Image 1 (cartoon, rainbow, N blue to C red):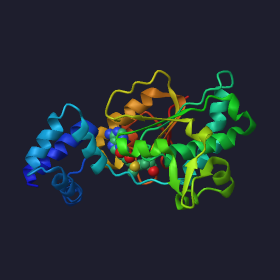
Image 2 (cartoon, protein in one colour):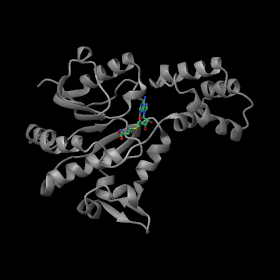
Image 3 (tube, rainbow, N blue to C red):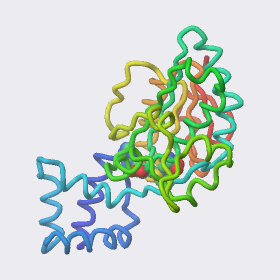
Image 4 (cartoon, protein in one colour):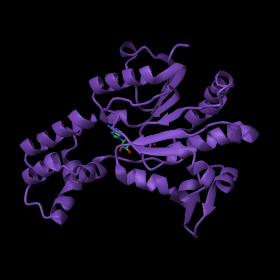
Length: 268
Ligand SMILES: C[S@@+](CC[C@H](N)C(=O)[O-])C[C@H]1O[C@@H](n2cnc3c(N)ncnc32)[C@H](O)[C@@H]1O
């Protein structure tokens, strides 16, 4: 891949999806070379033309599936789930005692481990009242590949072993020696959709809590600022934003209040 072709690809991805891969040429080329060879492209120019002009969107989706980094796991950064249980959910339940509606969005859900962990925390928190609440949470991602995986809800045994044994028993069904499937009640509680965070947010109702963890690391400061402002607008007063532990938000650039590292809140 020539530098001109690489810059074209970088510009395309950043302008449409916020993802900045400018310093990742080796990784990008490593991931794409095989794909181009398999698909019979002679050079990157032809490939990029196909991505940019393919009306079916198929070639573009394949590229996103190849180039997005989807690493995730159950119970990742546990302090966030403990804060959800101890602080956020008690606040929501008090606030929505008449509507019984909990609105949580996992905005870069990858293969489902994060939203399913949230759903399990909500279920445990509500206990006997679980059935009385609308607990459906929204989980979105750019990659169709990970969303397909997430919707199936099938995970290797070792992936679920980080969860408490009682949660494993209550929320998973054994398929065979190696694979477990998320139970129907949890799976039906998570609505997976494809969504680009750079697009206008289409939500009718405001969110009580947004998880946006480990995705902004790929975004420029400007992109981050715009995204955080859009999230601010769709949060309920008092609503929370949770980002990854290694990420940060420029406090000057947002109206969100700092609660503790990686947790922010819209004023009540
Ligand atoms: C590293 S995973 C994070 C998964 C999970 N939030 C966690 O912390 O474990 C990042 C995800 O962000 C998604 N992503 C990247 N850019 C995006 C965008 N513009 N819109 C929506 N999702 C995006 C990727 O497809 C990937 O699945």
